[in-house]
Length: 212
Ligand code: Z5A
Image 1 (cartoon, rainbow, N blue to C red):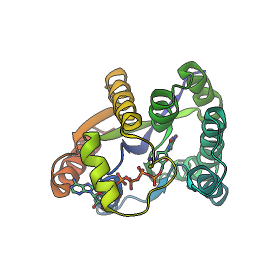
Image 2 (image 1 turned 120 degrees about the vertical axis):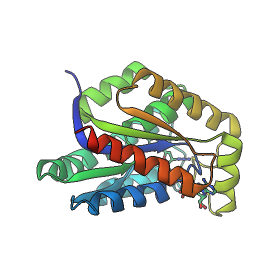
Image 3 (image 1 turned 180 degrees about the horizontal axis):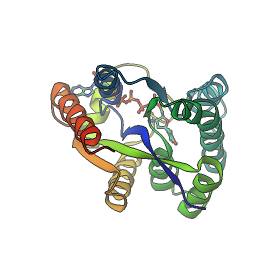
């Protein structure tokens, strides 16, 4: 079973402090400015149940999940998100902008935690079944991203990992982008946020002009 590409599903990926939140808002504005209906969402999360799973995964107050538990909870949340939020929106003709999607599991649970990538691919095929038409990877050196993130205050369970962990996340994301050049666009997110946002919006416009 192959993944069904969804041209109106656009995902944002990147390490910590890459600027995804700001960029996502600008992309949504660019689409609504063209009269397009947009659903903004995130992973883990995006439905009430998936948001509860997010809390289990990220709240440092809970028992730390094992590597497999973390992976399976990410996919449990994603299964719910895809069925209850993403697919219904796409089916009615809306665009979906998601702050992270399956590539994050390859980067964090695969690359950084050393999980079995074949198993992740199997879960992706069986549980998700779809892939984005466009993925913007906001790529920032780990040191810069962590400085930004820590400057912001509260850190969740995964954010409190060591620097090497985030280096592995970055390397895995870069590998995903190289392996899927047809849907990935890599943006240098070490620049000022206004430039990162402008570059991202420009890529979205180019994607729209290409007729996706
Ligand atoms: N996770 C996983 O392990 N597996 C999965 O399959 C999925 C997720 C889907 C989600 O938490 C966590 O779950 C995430 C991956 C894991 N873990 N970590 N760590 P989240 O959604 O809360 O975490 P996040 O996606 O990393 O959020 P973030 O750190 O907030 O990233 P961001 O949205 O890219 O950053 P931001 O809020 O836009 O910016 C952060 C700060 O940096 C803020 O103060 C900005 O003003 C500043 N910033 C951003 N860009 C710039 C630039 N260019 N210049 C200056 N300052 C900047």
